[in-house]
Length: 440
Image (cartoon, rainbow, N blue to C red; front, top):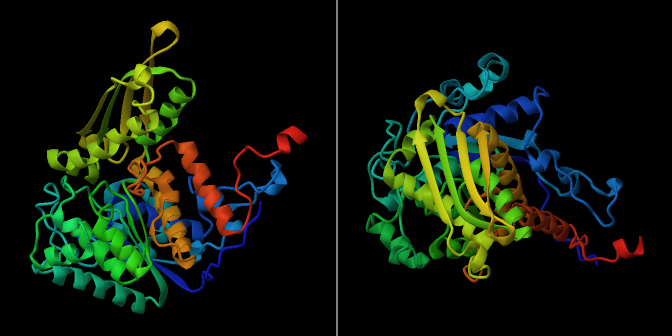
């Protein structure tokens, strides 16, 4: 049954994209978008640019491209800026990260990349111990730093004639933090900022500044940032969408495909051992045990929430799940992951699955950044505020309502995303329970 089409403000003018962190991921995103604008590359991996959405009966002529179906901003409207404690331009960052071929994918758009110089960052090495840089804001109280970020957003918006802004965290993983009294509500959070409370991490200051400026905030790292009551309260107060956390790009992406397969066929799981090697800045940061713990928490929750051991104790009640990440500089951004999966089937007989994924970390993450920016801007223009759970497809630890558990199954996440788009446009949501099969 069709519903009324949701009111969505038109995607007019320029959309500013402010990235926290101008390292491998951010420079790969920017370079890719500039190449695509010029017809020098294809947006492979981007759902907003290449994906379709089925409408009604299952026929090919009823599956338009998503970008034709919903009023997304176009990539020609995007204008990029960034904060980073390292002063490298996007051009220098792209060369140093070694993700892209310099002469094929960097030099043709070198002029545009050189124009993007990072603003001084709000940075405190006690939260990211393996990273350092001189391009930082002067030492000040946390409230003052948040206000400085707000001014940066206003200045960037004015300087580049942007109609709207989206802020996305593409930076490093902070040390592990537990939610506490400072995060319970907005008043407590602001009092904690004024008191320079250590539980207010830099990522929270960026989120606070973005929301106060009416800009959607996306958390691409496993940091404790928007997933606290204070930030959710602020998002609703300002009418701004938020989402996170931790881009689902590599090994965890495979887990959200393989674990649903085991559950769908009622195959048991005894243990899942995962290990990774990578040599980029992210790998160096995660070499610190406290930063790794933040990432570990993000990765470990996936299997349990998919398999629901309380419902199936005989199949998943005692799973041994281990995750390891090792910094190995020679590998650079080309991450390699291994998974050993011990399963059992009929009558309890043991079997194994082995997966070796030789992936490119930033190449997988870049289209996620593009999609999230465009979808969050759409949500903002549609008047959707607070946690955008329909974007769970893109995250390892999807932010969700406290009354439910997070959905990790990749295919359920995909259905939820596309059904949200159908709902926004007044189209019938697809449940695969309609009468078309029986009528045919």
